Image (cartoon, rainbow, N blue to C red; front, side):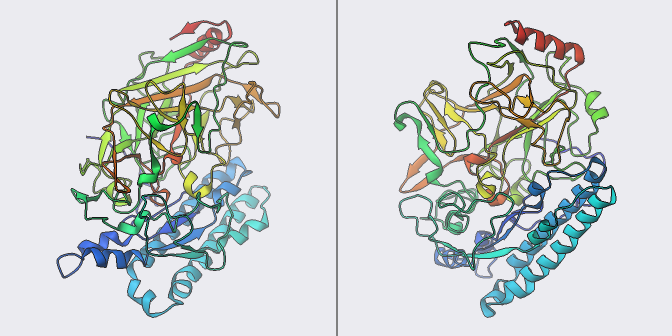
Length: 534
């Protein structure tokens, strides 16, 4: 059984999570109410299919600008206080969702109810919290951009009933802009990317009533929050050499020139089921800060409350005991009706992440060189996040996703589709991390600007230094989903924040460096001298 270790409890841990509430860290994101769950709460022994469809028409969203992504220059001494206030913004969004989901009758009777009773008060709370962020920053001599105060306001959207006869995602048909959606915090509203209103994945429509152990296996996937048939593609039908979709930021940094060596570390596939729903990088001290389940290999002490000292002293699953680094990524699940250990827990079934957790058959972790020249050692405790768990909401600026199948990896890399692999072929998730470092910082206020991707020729911009590039390749035995009449049966998907609808573009990966200095020096030497080491 997966564990979710807690050493200390944050005051933010007790969050009022309603069913399928969407919560985006950083004080922003898209809240949506999925009323499919209410179909089993009727006094008439459950709603009919028509009643479920009627409920789908009531699905509402609230879009709040992402404050955290705008805070790129927070003084070190202010970061803990700012992190606490960002968690407060998250809590406020959660409470607003809970009120949205519990006041459907009032909304039906009063067209101004959502604005007056939910969105208006939410703006006031957010404004006060953003002002506390200002105080935290200015108290230690930092500069606060006063335009951030404008991020307090959230907007509403109403989703129309779904049609989706062809199994595709309804593009803008179900989304009313209600005065236009704010495009702050990097959220893109471009056509099919940000159609969260229309892509409520059929709002819980059963589409013929196909259910499996309480899981909807129709257009809406997990009770309406994805994935849908349009998220999958038969890889054998992808023509020629292709990289489909958008968001492929991370190219391999190595090649036939420069530093051509490699260093492989073998850390297992999480056979001991070390799981939790924290993220110590983006939400330190906040329980369930990720709102989805992570696999952990390598360091065995990673949770929301782990200090660098605790991580450095931890046990590791890596064969090379000089590698106590932490490698973690969202779990992959098979939505076949199976209830796993977290079915009724935060970050799991409570937040739309349901189904059988799949253990990778292979987890290959390799560090490679740079096409331009030598690499330098990574600093201890360097943190790198690659990809964006909220890419479906935030847009693709930070997306970094590669999906394929064994036997097809040199031909096809998919970025916004899950592959359906032929018999005998396995699903592959590949991630190439940022490999340029600013030479000074082990982290940054938005957890991104201290590292960068190398250019196609291997060069690092802005005076950044080339470091070993981490490449993670995960292989899974996944029963192939079936596409039937525009629906997907027994799909698989990565865990996500609920509002991101289990889209493949949201895949991401995290790393914290805790190699010993001797082992790191060995890695650099192997890479720079063209050797293959482990």
